[in-house]
Image (cartoon, rainbow, N blue to C red; front, side, top):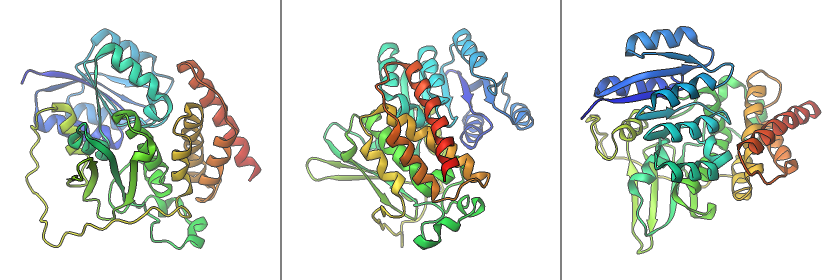
Length: 359
C-alpha cells in the first residue's frame, strides 16, 4: 500500500491520540499535521512520539488549518474536535482531501445538508468514526428498514431519579464502558450524545428519525443492528475500542488492523432495555427537531454551554436537559448557509447563558 498523508484535527483529544496509535501500528501513513487547542505540551509530546510533521494551534480559529489543507491536499483528514467548530472544518476537509473520517457528530447535527451537498460536489469519501455508525456502515444494504443504535446509559444509569440532581462532575465522568473526553462522557449520561447520533444516522444513511431505534445495552458488546425487509436482523459485535473503527476508516474497504484477542461468546449477555424518558428527557428532544436545522444547532449550542456550566458548578446535572429544552423552544429560523448557522449558534449560546442566569 502506497504511503498516504494524514491530518488529524483534534490530535490531543481521546480520538486523535488513538488515531496516532493506529497510524503508527499499521504504517503506510504519514501524519502531515495535527491540531491542538490549549494543550501545547501534550501536542509536542505526541508529535515527537509519532512523527507529526507540523503542529497547528486552533485556539484563535481555524484559518491556519484551512490554509494548510488547501496547500497540502492530504489524502485523509480526521475531524475529531467536538462542537459547532467541527462543521466549517469538515466542509473545508471535504473540499481539500480524498477522504474525511468524521468523529465530530455535531457537524452533521448542525449542518447535515451542507455536508451532504459538499460531499456530492467534491466526490470526497465521508466515513463515520462513531462505533455505532461505523457498525451500521459495515452492515448496511439497500433493503434496510430501520437501524438500532445501542447506548450504555452513561454513568448515572443506576441512580435513583430523585438523586440525579445531586450528581457531581466526578460522578458523571465515570463512564461504565468507554474512556472518552469530558463533554461526550457527560453527554452520554444525559444521552444528548445519543440524540446527536440519531440525527447523524439520518444524515449518513438517508433515514427518518423514526427508523432509528436506540436501546440501552450495558455490556457495550453490540454496537448496532440493521433490520432488513425480509425479516433478517444483522448485528455488529465487538470490543468497546475506538481504535477498531479508526483503523477501518483509514484503510476502508480493506481491513489491515490486527486485533486478534477476540472475546469469548460463552456466557455473553445480549440484554437490551428501553430508554426511560424520565431519566433521559433531552435524548427524546432529538426526535422532535429532526427537520429543523435551526433547532438542531440550538440543541448542540445549548448543550455545549450547559456542560461547561455543570463542570464549573454553575448548574445541577438535571438542569442540563431543562435549559437545553427551553433554548430549543425559543430558537426559530430557516438557515440557508454556514453564515446563518453561525448566527444561530451565537444566538443560542447567548440565550443559554440567559436561561442559566434565570435558574
